[in-house]
Amino acid sequence: MEREIVGLIGLGLMLGLLVLRVHIGIALISVSFGGIYYLIGPRPAFGMLSTLPYDFTASWTLSSVPMFLLMGYVCYYAGLTRGLFQVAKSWLAWLPGGLAVATIWGSAGFAAVTGSSIACAAAMGRIAIPEMQRAGYDMRLATGSVAAAGTLGALIPPSILLILFGVFAEVPIAKLFIGGIGAGLVTAILYMAVVVGLALVRPHMAPRLKELPPMEDRMRDLRETWPILVLLVVVIGGMFGGFFTATEAGAVGALAAILIALTKGSLSREGLWDSLKETLLTTSSLFLIAIGATLLTRFLTLSGTGHMIADAIIAMQANTLILLLGISAIYLVLGMFLDPLGAMLLTVPVLLPILDDAGISLIWFGVFLVKFLEIGMITPPIGMNVFVIKGVVGSEASLTTIFRGIFLFLAADAIAVTLFIAFPQIILFLPGLME
Image 1 (cartoon, one colour):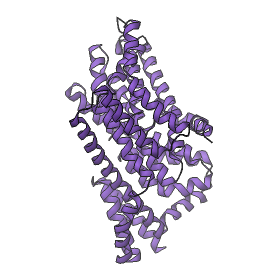
Image 2 (spheres, one colour):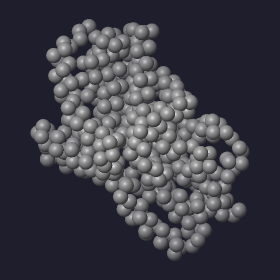
Image 3 (spheres, one colour):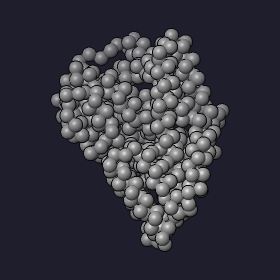
Image 4 (tube, one colour):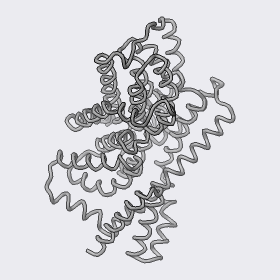
């Protein structure tokens, strides 16, 4: 029992460090190393600390992380994503709240070349919010729609969160990616319903555009998106068709993005350098957290705390619905204070044996988990997407205004996760076609 107590104390210390705003990677590594040192001595502890980082990062599957990041950064710095909002605007402006609807679907398109919710919100915010301001949109709707739409960035593949979940849960990443498509489309449709409904009930919040572009301009805008369409066909089509794995898709996508950018002549030497630099910095930060989570898994295994918590939950004999509601509550709370990657890697080692015993599909749960993690990106008090949008708009909108703007989108998220629980085939149908 002493070992389990050590594990619980370690978890408590870790939460304390996170409250003090210590970087989650440092908190995970320091507490896990200290616990292992106490349990089995200095030599094994230092041995794990010296070998585990290499053993983890040398994984072939994880090579897809920097590749997908590089693909996204090349698309951004080469300007391949600039036409996404414009084409969505050209074709959807006739709808009530057309600019906000265009923002949602433009974000869905941007999500297909990035794996980051923050990057999606920042990029679309700089493009869409000024357009909505000029059209007379209420700032609550303008900022809230962009912050919420940004959450599609980590749900629609390629998704860095889904890759890391697949590595830890040992499930096919390609199936996680394809499952994310269904969840992402349902989320985007519900967000669109919120915008259209709000624009119909309160038309002053989203004035309709007085002039719609002619068909000639719409077709021209559509042609400008060919680079993204090519990448979608290559990456998603290649995985779904079984031509290459998700790991190989990252390298293929990065190479395709570079070749397309060079063909268009839009990728400068400085842009390529910035893409490589951003890729290295982001990958390093992600891997630091992931290494800490791997050490935490070893610590919880040695202490028996993970199995103790799992056994306690199983002993409650909760049915699947009660279990999922409890897990949902945990992630709602964690999402208010932790970044998505930290919240996932902190809890997955404990939850995996529970999910296995309950017979819950890990493909379904991986997508369901990422959806909850992204809800945390727009929930107060620390909704990262909200702070990103605040940085974009500056003094033109307060944090309170933006948080008020995302309220109805949170209601749409609640409907989405309810649908995912009630109809798991929303997530599992497309992956099932790959078998």
